[in-house]
Image (cartoon, rainbow, N blue to C red; front, side, top):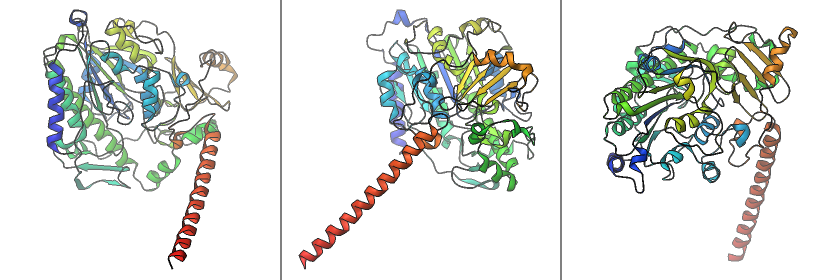
Length: 509
């Protein structure tokens, strides 16, 4: 896309920001807060205020956490981009929607017919809605949801020789020398800043989707060089996996762990990850500077969240896609600038991001659609010690669930395998207590919190590589059979085409 088109797109969006909305009740909207919605991709607890890694350097996110309410035990709804974002943005638990794995982009047309997404809900209730970067999983920039959406420019990256390494374009862990303005996240943050800086006649919802630290772990050289050359590895126990079952083991990315271990690359991978987090923090700082200096600062709510956590060698795996703490725990902060300034407020109880939809509706004094799951966290914003309505449930494939409370995690897999961890004393989840009779009462207590019903999996548009749980074997087999059927049909068609061509050649002779 050329620069003129990008500028034109931005100008159109900015004009829309100041134009009055048709039919909007300005009196009704006068007290509704602006919402700055910062989505971060693949960021785990390697953030300063969360204590996930001692060398994390995130001063801007730490300041935001200190000024707002930090949910210290926030958990993903599902440890993968697509199911996590579908759950948050449509407001439905996977076990109620059937959206367990990853889906191709076309699924959104089907979902919009059934659910009212969060941006659509806000737009229909008097908000101007602006988006940039990764909000949904995959591009979804429809007029149904958005007043304006940035179509960011894509620049070729230039890499600094000798800093980092790559296996391929996606498995890359390198420093770049491009001007910061060419980087995707910088453009995304700048668009959000432009929205925030405007004078608005209606409340706005600015969804700013930062894509780092998602792979590739490439980021500007300034942030790469700022990291320590030797990164402290996470705690790893040699026999950690001796007390887990088949389904849990199937979720691990064993090949990538072996590749980094054998190639002595883990330090480079972790350094690049920390660098990308630092780069995200820089852009969060830019956004927060704009919020604090904006015309509507005293009527703005900032929400920062990550879609799921990330393994960097723990449990001898890489990436996400498990139900353990590393893939589940996420940064989640809500800073309501309308409230009296209080510092250091922390919610220690476990919550998931399914509660974001109802919380935003509550903050905006709106009634959410009936299909929306979860509960409002406004009581916790007013008093962090307020008990939550229910524990945090995460899902990865039908029948695979984690139940997280303040101190405990239960994992139950579709095949009956169980894991139980006392996270208060076993933060690394090394000691599975599920089969220890001493903890039978706690096990029974948490088992009772599991979903009582499961929606059947939505089978259209599935990315088959992401299948886990009770449907994996059946759908993988069906996919293979369909693939073989297609191969046979193609072979038959080619044979028929050759036969026809031969016949035509004979006739022409």
